[in-house]
Image (cartoon, rainbow, N blue to C red):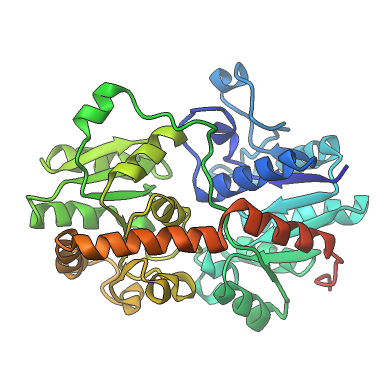
Length: 390
């Protein structure tokens, strides 16, 4: 039996049915893991130790927790945490070990895989994984990621842009595997009736975490500029202070609802109910939220993120201006003004929305459903030869 382990420190909440938290990287690993398991693969996860309430619940796939206490804490804990990681890897007895974030773990993972003859795969998440000049990490983390990347057995890219970046900046030939698009649950479970009645008739949905690069503040300004339009923000916690501030900002704006953290089934409901999905990030790889939008036939309005020109080339929504990733980065009101007329125009154009709905479902069926992407992943794993190692 083929065996694979996904190393994802913050994935544990997503591995519990209907639990809140975790982001796009974790979601992608779970979706790929479930599909591989259905084909007979032995699939497991390594995550950080769960909180006590989570330990009483059965996980969707086997989990081998270890300590990642140094993440967000003291680097003095790093050696013992890496030793804990080694013990967890040994317990899984997997052939393949796959990681997206954090990239600096590639160095200890490569050491383990060399010692025990295992295969290490780095799966690019953000564009800056392939273009280090865009990366904002400390020197040590950057060095650990760059050195570890050259020790991998294979690199997977989400997009052709990432693939070019790995080749141009590292001399590494990567294998493109498109992100997978399917639901996390076997049944579509909507939120409670009271939630649906409170947050109904959403025009524009924003989904992300509370990191500064996501720029939820633009939505606040948009809501003020467009009082007749109903906005909603769903947000995972990455920065507690910004999460609290976002909740307060929404309380002060009558046409802006704060949904907070939602379990996957409820999140799917809001994607199905909104008219438009809005992205305001400064950096992304291939946003999982784009797939969730298009799976539900919803247009994506993006300030500057359009991986491989997919939105533009397939008429899947609106890309405002890619140059806005480099200009007016923190002028949230200016950026809201740039978005306003695009959103108003699209909301008033039912014919265009209908066309985008058709285009998006065709695009998903052609490029991102399991039967399209799982064979590519298995082909990549079968060709995992270790040629990247230097």
